[in-house]
Image (cartoon, rainbow, N blue to C red; front, side, top):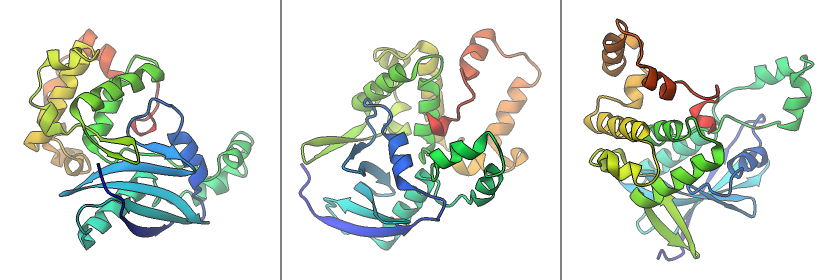
Length: 257
């Protein structure tokens, strides 16, 4: 069990950001296992390069977030501090300038009241590519409550955890670990055979370096994973079973699951 000690960091947020509505969004299902929300604070075990930090985020003052690294066993380097700040910026979509959207919404009969009711809400993301893709696959063709149940079973079976103040915090399973599993390992925790195949293949692609954020952010003709996938599929129709699982039930983004 971790012993209490803290490192504090502050992050400035733009005027179009509000912590409360984003916390409400992240608190929408009691089965969520990747963070814990209590007393207007969110606590999450964040895996960074070479170090895993139990991180607690709260609103210190208007447009200022307070970040506490709880129970750190080793000193936090400057590079780790920068990586943590970048993670939180990505997670809460802090860097996106949505001022023009709000200016447009004020003149729109449909958007005006909605944006007032949810002012400051951002597109909450999943910074880790493997976790984001897995969540998109796990949640397909099922209701959200069961999707959270499956994710919890997946995380508790293959993730790692630590206990702080009698609460267990989890990291998402790594691609390296999942790449070594068999399909039956995942169907044993109620994932379908097809979803198990997809998750293991994605894990193997990430482990080999064929799939990464850097590749996906490049133009299409410079991304080997996209190019190979396009060449393999453009001359043949999608298999009906694959089409059923590949097409989303709704247009909801992966980051909004």
